[in-house]
Image (cartoon, rainbow, N blue to C red):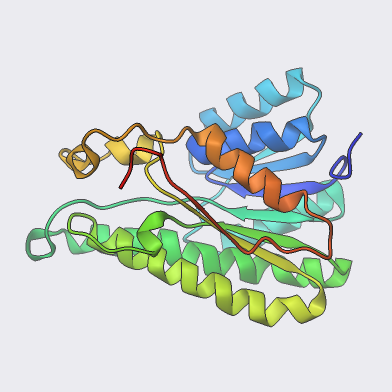
Length: 241
């Protein structure tokens, strides 16, 4: 029964990868969870695994690209748990390839998911956090938000945007006692890095981080006392230069 026991967290992109690992880590802290994603089967399987460990988890199918969906997630979380302490904006997609031959619809999907999905989440949850008098928004960005390279133009642009938004958000909500953390991992072994043929060639010879590595960093940030904000955490595989 630690300080996070009983707290409530919403996690987007919770069906796999970093989101699923964060749910497991939060569950070990005794937190109550809302698992959000687009694949119902993965969310239900995750909730069932957590239930075996005594963790209360509510799976909700939603699309972070739609503000109405995110607002409905917040409403369902409040109806079930009556509060929201942590919101982890983790859902993301990626592109791969040169700009001149890219599918414009993939650009749209990356930006709406990775950028608007984060903004919509913050917009949906902040009124409840303000009413509660506390809250912590964790934005899972990327090392791609701090460096540029050829191969994932929309993804790089989206992650730069989320790093900038995290700082804007911190400046706005810190006076109200709320916290923001932005997580910037390098290569992580998740389904995201294998979506596009050839994308693995961007990081030849690198041993990726595991999703659990990133989840530990998120847990470290949220476990800090209310007077402490860990704003930015950059994680890299030791072999990634």
